[in-house]
Length: 442
Ligand SMILES: Cc1cc2nc3c(=O)[nH]c(=O)nc-3n(C[C@H](O)[C@H](O)[C@H](O)COP(=O)(O)OP(=O)(O)OC[C@H]3O[C@@H](n4cnc5c(N)ncnc54)[C@H](O)[C@@H]3O)c2cc1C
Image 1 (cartoon, rainbow, N blue to C red):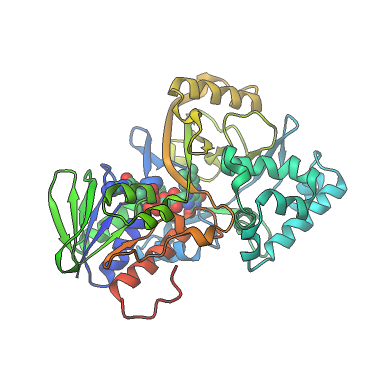
Image 2: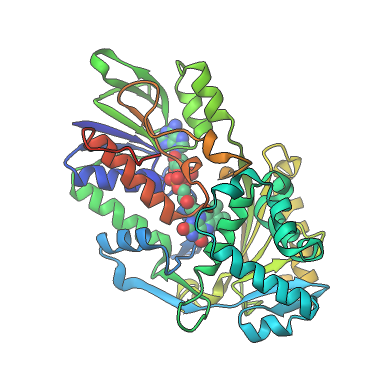
């Protein structure tokens, strides 16, 4: 069976991996020069690469870890004890251990008790479908009280959603809490985060070489421009060069707006359903510095007015030799789709962001910057609004032999590659074994 996969991000690559394992004849199309999408690598200094966007693996990422095992990289996974910081009331605070939590000055003893009890309560909820009907803000105020909401949760919601924070559902913030809880090692309660030696660059290279070994054809720098339902239930793809390719089945692994734009005959009601999910955009400033700035992997910013929504000092998790002993900082800003900030010039963004860095670290000097880069992404985090699970597509589409899988199908969880691998496996199973009972699929 000839199957095409459109999109060479982690979803498309993992789908091609599982489809080729099931003896399908697979062709993958990626519009960029390199595969990887949001998981791609960046050459920060000549010859030294790491993830373009900050990525970690949690010990609870069982699907991702078993995929890494399947591609033969499990021995390269390393977990490190990390710390989380808070910049609150103009000061940096560590919030990584129970003792530090108790000593956290910005909250009163009663507020700390209520925060701890609320987090424990949230982490024990197993069925979050009830929370999907509530706005995150309302649910958080009920569980934690208004003061804690304003001091802690409102800024944290902003860090995930930017100005779209009031649209998020209770189940989304619940999924953030449970994922954060997943960083805690069961017995010691230490915060642990993992990476693969060489980062996603190694993972992507290993997937690519295994796909090539299995005979998968990878067309890079080749954007699919058009999907057409052909004769005999075949699907035809027209690529960037105007060439036509015929397949028995096609799986689209690109964000929904991209899928809509390449399928001119898409039924109106189906287009409407796919368009109902908005994606947050992202601007991320990456800095390579002579030295690390913070002992915390993530610093949450609860004071208002920062141009970025979180401060990530990845030096705390990447192997020292990765960037020749230099430090790597990520400064992300998530934006609603219509936020004009997305179109600010690089010079304006960099100036704004560096002012923000100096606010946290007054001794920070620009002479410590070895390199900087600014990246923008249009389709990052699907916004999980109220009753989100009712607005997402299934893997099958209104026409036979055309399938779709993308991150809008992640429900009650944050955007992460553990969910991506799970979805890719489900989609591949459905395509390769259509007769199997797939009733549990999205
Ligand atoms: C800042 C940030 C931090 C993150 N942190 C983590 C983390 O710590 N842990 C974790 O597990 N995950 C993390 N993630 C999430 C992870 O990066 C995503 O889950 C994953 O990359 C999504 O992959 P995808 O293939 O679904 O989408 P994408 O990566 O968007 O891939 C889509 C691909 O399709 C291609 N494409 C689009 N249109 C066409 C076309 N017409 N023809 C051909 N190709 C096309 C694109 O070029 C792209 O390569 C993070 C993401 C971001 C942005």
